[in-house]
Image 1 (tube, helix red, strand yellow):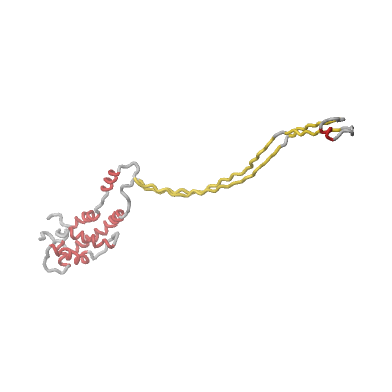
Image 2 (image 1 turned 90 degrees about the vertical axis):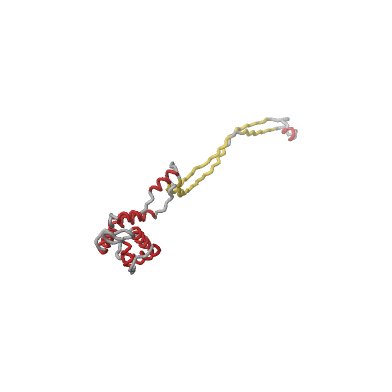
Amino acid sequence: MSKYTTEVRYICESYAGLSESVGYNDVEKVIGDALPKIFDFDFPIFDENYREVLERKIIKHFYTREIGFETVGLWKLKLNTKLNEIMPYYNQLYNSTLLEFNPLYSVNKTIHRGGDGKLTRQGTDTVRERGTRDVTNTNKYSDTPQGTLENIVNDTYLTNATINTNHEAPQLDTGTEYGTTFTTTNDYTDTIYGLEGRNPSKLLEDFRKTFLNIDMDIINDLDKLFMQLW
């Protein structure tokens, strides 16, 4: 029963076309029928599909609270104004909760390296061989025709003989020319993720501290639109 103004539930029942209050089992239906008439104004929301969810939470939370203004019209004006003031900020918080990441990873980075290289090698390989050899020339002469050729060969009955020995030093050079070009391409990507110098239990504890109940933060900001005495 209202003491100072009127309770939200009476406003909802009136907008739902009811002439008397209903019980707990009908509350959800009453709120659903009343939402389009209570929130007949626009306010920014990060996702249109979440608009009714948030509106329903607000009304259900304050369902048995009295409005903090003399008339329903003035209360709706203040509700409209307040939501348009605070929702741009809360929409950013909503969007931040949609970011996907692994709370147990202390490092997650990708490093790309790329580049081309060329190496050219040219030259000549030479193999040189040296050595000596002796070449001996022998001249034999006999003016004694009575002898046979065999006697000349056997150095018998020779009139004169000349033996010449030459020392020869041959040189052999062989060479091979070459020219080789190597072309290399270095292009690769390193992906590093996981734990790096951090305790996984501490990471999980820190992550839990960041949990945001944004809906309740909005509701708490709207609390001043209702009577603070009950």
